[in-house]
Length: 86
Image (cartoon, helix red, strand yellow):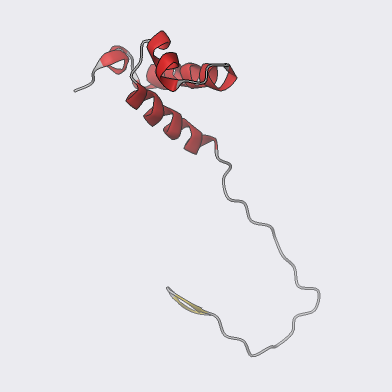
């Protein structure tokens, strides 16, 4: 069962709402999360949960770079992976 402000919004609206709340915290001067949450009318527990959820979504995806070997060399090295060896 949803309670508080989460009960009044659709999923996309909830994300948008919490994004605004967290963005305001990030821009703000308040040092106390408790005071900020009280002013915003949200619980500290919900604020922290959403702040962490949204922060994890902002992390950049892991990227890989293409590596080209100028001159292939036979080294005799074998790499064993959990899924098998290559």
